[in-house]
Image: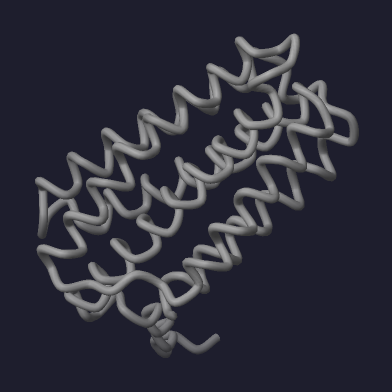
Length: 189
């Protein structure tokens, strides 16, 4: 049996270059918060003038919380000279469509959307916190705070029946896959 050392797995692009990785983090988080604002905007529009107006107000409130995050990332990007993803117009439209579409499927589907999105985003923020903790503790603290806010949205969605949505496993899987793809794309372009 050979005891030769195994070749190292090459790092993911950007991990070896702190400045490049930081730009990826800010770009993708900005895109994610922009998308969240538009998802909740779409959901609040659908529920706003219905018998479920209180639910519309809840989504409107969450939209406001996401706007705070978006504003913070826009400021950080300006300070650090990071450009947004070129996919911004696509993500804005896709997110609004996702918000409207899941709301039209019903209250439980709208909550399933929140649960799926915030699950992916919570994990994503946790990975970023680990990456920047030593090099930028101030950013790590902000990312931790935003992660906690997102997990609060996730937990509320679960409490309100997200997993009771029609075709929940399929709906959740599709939304999670879309989020993960958008993250990878937004990091790079």
